[in-house]
Image (cartoon, rainbow, N blue to C red):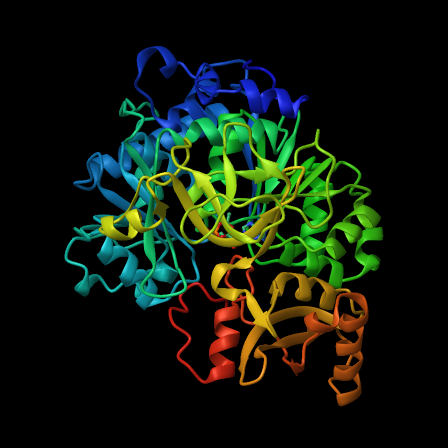
Length: 564
Ligand code: 6R9
C-alpha cells in the first residue's frame, strides 16, 4: 500500500488505506520514538538526498540554497545555541517572531530537535497580540530581530527569560543572545531528543469569531498525514521544486511550508518580502517552480494585474497548482486555466485539522465550486446541530470523525474550549457550513455564523461573492446579512473596484442586476457599498465579521490577525 503515492485509484484507497501504512515510511515505525525535525531533515541528509537542495531562499537582498545536509548542520547549530544559551528544556515554549529568512527555518527545526514546543508568530503582529500569545503559553524564549524587539513587552512577561536576536551588531547581555554569532562557533552535531507520538511540536494561535486567540496544539504524529498529503495532494516527487507562499506564522506555512515537503524529501522555495506580481512570476521562472500552493486572494491579485505581466515570464515549468484558505471562486479557476493552462486544485482544512482533509486530487474529476473529497483515511460528513448525519445536498455543519493523525490535541490552557469542538465525542465540528452532493463532493457555504437568511432563503455569502467577482468592475467583494424587519436579513455587499472604475449609483444598480440575472433574485444584494479595500486577515480571508461590525456599529472584536 505504501508507495501508492499518486493515488491512482481513489475509491480503492478509501476502502483499503490505513494511516499505519504510512508510518512504514519512517524508522520510528520500529523504534516507537521519533522527532519530526529528524524525519524532515536528518533522515534525508543521511540518504541519497544528502546533496539535494532542501531550501532555496530569495528576497530583495539574499539568494541562498541549502542542501539537506546543510539544513541538518544549520538546524543542529541552532539547537546547540538554543540549548546552551537558555534554560529551555523539552516541552518548553519558544516563539519565533521574524520575517521569513533561512534563520527562521534553522531555529524552528533546531527548536524541534531539542524537543521544545514552537510558537510561530507572524512578523506583523503588534505588541498586544505578541503579549497575548506569549503570556498565555508562558513562553520561556523567543527568536526575533532587533527591529521587532520593541513589540515584545518583556517587563510584563515574567516567564520570558531569553531573547535570541538575528541581525547585525547585536549587543548581548544576560537576556539577549546573538544567534548568528553563536551559531558560527557552535558544533554542527546535535543529539536529537527522541519523543513519542503524542509529544507536542507546534502551537499555532488562531482567532475565532469571539474571545482571545486560542493556542492550537499539534503533536509529532501529525507528520504521518503531512507526509501522505504532500504525496497525494501536492503530488510531490523527487524532481519537483515546490513553492508554498504562506508564512510559517500560519498553519499552511508550517504544515506545507516546512513539514510536508521536507518529510517528502522535496526541494522547497521560500520567497521573502512582500507580494508583487513581478517578483512572484519571476520566482516561478527563475527557480522553475513545478508545484505551487497559494491562496485565492493572491490569485485574484495576480488576476487583477492582467495578462500583461504573464506574457513577460516563462511559467511553463508549472505542472500543479493548489489553493487553500478561502473559497476558490470558479472565476479564479477559469483564469488559471487560461493563464497557466492548468486547473487550480482546491484544498480545505484548518489550523485545528493540522493537515489537508478535503481536497481535489489529480485522479478525481474536478467539480467547479467544490473543495473536493476527503483524503483517504479521513471521514467527513455534514451534521445538524444535534450531531445527526444529514443526507446529501443538505446544508449543515462540516464535521470530521475524531482521531485523524494531524488533529489538534488541545487548546493551550483551555480544556473546556477543546472539548467544545467535539460533538457526542464522535465528530469534530469545524464551524464551516457546507453540503455534500450525491457523489461525495463537498461544497463550502461559509462560516456557520456567516450564513444569510433572507426571506426564508438560505444564502451562502461565498456564492454571492463569487458572482460579484465575475463582474468586470469588481476586484474584491464581501457579503453579509444585514438585519431587516421584513426579510429577516437582506444581502449587503461591500466591493472594491479595479483600477479605472469609479463608484456610482449606476454601477451599483448594474451590479445588482448582474447578480440577479446570473444567480438568483433572492441572492442579489439589496445594498452595495463601495470601499477602497476590504478588511482581510493576513492570510487573505475577507473578515465578514468586521464588515458586519461596521454595518451595525458594533465593536469588531479581536483584530490581531487583520492586515494593516
Ligand atoms: C488552512 C487554513 C481555516 C478556515 C476554514 C474555512 C477557510 C480554508 C478553504 C476555506 C473555503 C477552502 N478555508 N480552506 N474555505 N474553501 N478550500 O486556512 O487554516 O487559517 O485555520 O483557516 O479557512 O473557513 O474554517 P485557518
